Length: 68
Image (cartoon, rainbow, N blue to C red):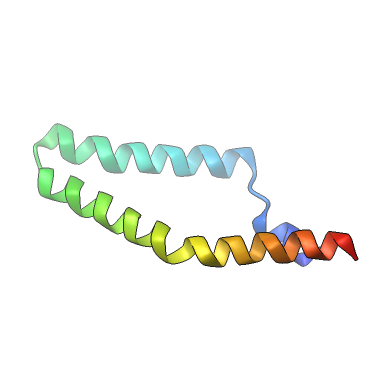
């Protein structure tokens, strides 16, 4: 059950994350700071590449825990 709570996302959390991503992309572009935009995109891509294997492992462990 702890694993299920760890990977469960509520609708409010997802919406807040989406608003944060949109504001982080639109504000630097509106101000004209393209370097901030590129920096954000590069760091987001780095996090995705770094944490995808961990997320997949957690998902596999979650599915295995439901089998037993």
